[in-house]
Image (cartoon, rainbow, N blue to C red; front, side):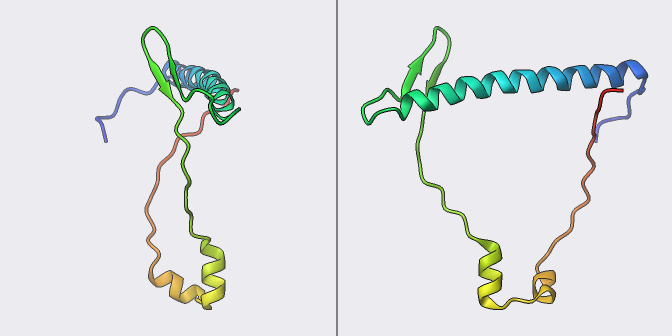
Length: 100
């Protein structure tokens, strides 16, 4: 971790403000991404590449494969004790900010 900083009420308020701005920007970006996806998948010959003055956005469609872990464990009759043998626990530190 980095060297400890002097934590003040101003730094907490700055953190909250920055996280709120990031959330708003993420919502805006997601809306644009949704519009790109909708346009690119509207028809078979719809454009997949969109160009701006500075950036280019490419919509990529692919299949994702995910193992249904719960069904696999159930169907193979794997016990919780067996799962515990292969389970790793890692400490995680997180910060939650809320308005006052």
